[in-house]
Each structure stands twice: as structure tokens, then as C-alpha cells.
Amino acid sequence: MTERVITPRHRGFLFLDSHPAGCRRLVEDMWQAAVPGPAATPTGDGPVALVIGSSAGYGLAATIAGLRRVGIRGIGVCFEKGPSERRTATAGWYRTAATAELATQAGHDMVFLNGDAFADEMKDQVADLLKQRFGGRLDHLIYSVAAPRRTDPDTGALYASVLKPIGQAHRTKTLVFDDQGVGEIKEVETQPAAGDDIEQTVAVMGGADWERWIDHLADRGLLADGFSTAALSYIGSPLTAAIYRHGTIGTAKAHLEATARTLTERLEKLVGGRAVTSVNGAAVTQSSTAIPGIALYVGLLRGVLGEGLVPPLAQLTDLWDQLTGARPLGLDDEGRVRLDTWELAPEVQTAVAERWQAATTDTIAHLADLDWFHAEVQRLYGFAVPGVDYTAPVATDVPWPRHAS
Image 1 (cartoon, helix red, strand yellow):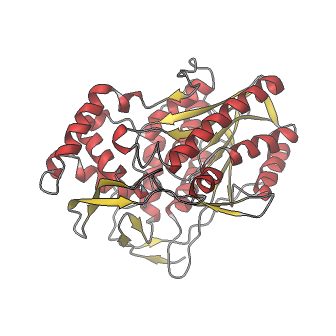
Image 2 (cartoon, rainbow, N blue to C red):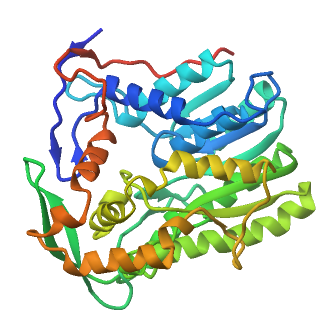
């Protein structure tokens, strides 16, 4: 087994390698932080769940919260790269291996599949596994996919999503770090969507694939009575609205919400079920750090809220409680579950906006929690995790978790 010392090498917020021990420790810490519910004791007949996008961010939080809070069994789907001679595996690969081991130790039958969630071949594989291993029924589906591209299974067309404003160019402050981890405020300008940018982004990040998953599983007769599904979404602050909620990605999220309403009408008639979008609060994720202005916004939000910033694990624990009926669904006027009220409280947004206006390279260290944000970015790849010895060699060729047939 190959062992070596792994040091963080990165280009901006993108790291070239991941640390297996750090990723494992991060998952173990999340597992311990998750609050078990009364139904979480493994009995072999817990609710069957499918988490699409299970290896990172809110999808990982959904998986761990589901296992610990409600004792789910079922399938996680993600798309990760294994180790090679030149590179470690992706962080999601190592996180999945750790999650699978903890689930097995706790007696939960959780299978993880690695591949393209947009492809019908993956949908067939999941459907076959549900029928053969999990009694041919699915109780819950969590959809948490953030991808740059999608191939349409019907036409073979390749769509690419873009992060662009609509109508006019948008100039915003953003946060970057130098090689020593010192924060700097810069201004960036993003050109507006052109051509079919909006349509392409909606094709990737809208509700088309979510609906295709439901259609595929319904056609196979795999949806249990009372089936529920939630697609994870984000609205965010007025400070980031031009590039996010009012931009190409926001249009895709609006399509996702419209899809939820369409799916609910069908699911109510079919199995007495429903579909919702879950609007989550801000977090440091591999997807969010790619959005201009989001790094600055989240750093300032943490500066305002401190420990009051609600982590994804706590948010997804709340969502599972609502999906399983432990407490009623809290829906807004658009039928969305709102897990972001702590972020969008008027007093919080006012304080963040004041700091945003005052933010410069000279002042940012006093306005945002830069140490926390910088460490959170590193933790996405398994670095800066407390309790890990980064001077010690570590095995990199961790195998993908096997599942007994």
C-alpha cells in the first residue's frame, strides 16, 4: 500500500490532492456530532433512502444525518476519482470510504455507487439494487447534485452550466488568499449570459434530472406509499443575488422549484407522496467557493454570527425530522422547506451588508472570520483537521467500499 506525506498544494480554492486521514477524521467528527433519533437503532427495517450526491457538502451531511438520526439504509450515489500514480483520490472518495465503514460498524446497510448520476445506466443500477437488496421500495430520495456538465440521455447533447449574471455585467467584491493564507479583497467583473447560457445551465442544474430519477423509479414500481423527495437548493443574500439568485444558477433553481410542484401533483396521486425543495443556508463547499463574492459573504456571515452559523449537518438533521414526520414540514408560500431563516434574518443581513461595504484588504481581518474560512476551505480536502498528524506518511490507495451481494 502506497504511503507518503501529503502537503496541501492548491490553485486558489482548488486543491490538487486530498488527505485520506484528514477526510476520514472529518467524517468521524461529523458522525459523532450527529444527534441520533429514537428510530436510529439498527433493526434491519429502517427507511430506505437514496442520496444522490452523497460524498460532499450538503449531500454528505444528508447521508450522515440520515444514518444517525433516522437509521436509514439504502444507496448513496456520487462521482469521484480514485488514486493514481500522480494524484491522491478525490476527497469525496476518501469521505465515502469512511462513511461506509462507520455505517457498517453501526449496523446500517448502506451501499455506495460511484458513477454519473445523470446517466440512465446509473438509474438502472440503483433500481436493480433497490429491488434485489432493499425489498423493492424506496421511502426517501435526497437530490444534491452540483455539476458543471450533463449529457442528455435521450439526445446525447452535452450541456454546460455557467455562473453568470443576466442582462448586464456584474462587478463585485471577492475574497482571495495569498500563499501565506492572508486574505485580500479584490473586485471581479463577470460578463452577462449570452446565447443559450441560461438554457444550458437550466439543463444541468434545473429539475430535469431529478424528475428523470423519479420517473425511472416510479416506472419500476419502486416508490413506497408516502414516498418523499427533497432537492437541496439555495437562495442567499441580496448581496450575492446578481450572480446567484438572479443569475443563470438562480434560474436553474427556479426551475428546480417548479419541478417540485409538478412532481408533488403526480406523487400525491401515485403513492400519496410529495416533492419539496429544501432551501439551505450558506456554507463553505467546493461548489460555493467557485461563485464570485460567495467567499467574502460567507466569511463576513461567520464574522457576524460566530458559532451561530448553522452547519450543514444540523440543517440536514432538521430536514430529516421534517421528511420523516418527526415534526411537521415547515413550508413557505412557494412550498419550499426553509432551513435558511437564521441566515436571512433582517438583523443578520443588515450587519453583513454593513461589513460588506466596509470590507477592504486593510479592514477584512477585523470584519470576517478569515481563519475559520481559510481552514474550512482546507478541510474540504482533508487538511487543517484537528487531531491529524500531517507530518506522518499516510496510505493513499484506499479502496472504494465494497458491498456484499
